[in-house]
Image 1 (cartoon, rainbow, N blue to C red):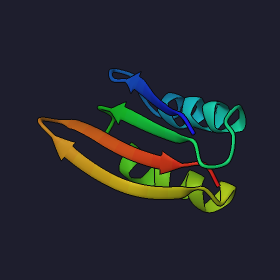
Image 2: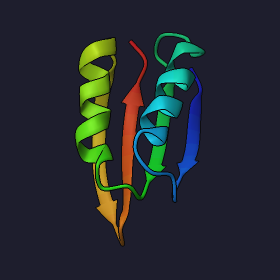
Image 3: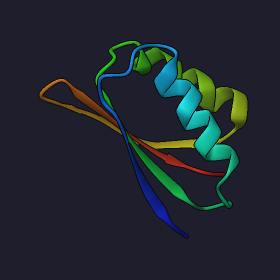
Image 4: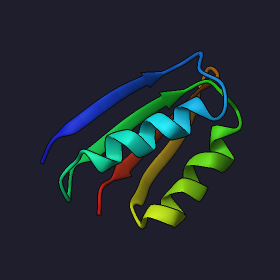
Length: 74
């Protein structure tokens, strides 16, 4: 299992979600993505994406305007 950090800071909707979707497609089951975003719409978009893909949101945090999502590939 691997862990990949994606720096998606400064990107606006829909780019962060599209890049997470593309990365998920290239991962093996059990791999983890840590997506760091500054677009406030990702709070809605990332969970919606995961409902479509069936992957798991293991954690979400916001520190100083940076939203961090921990996503496990199913």
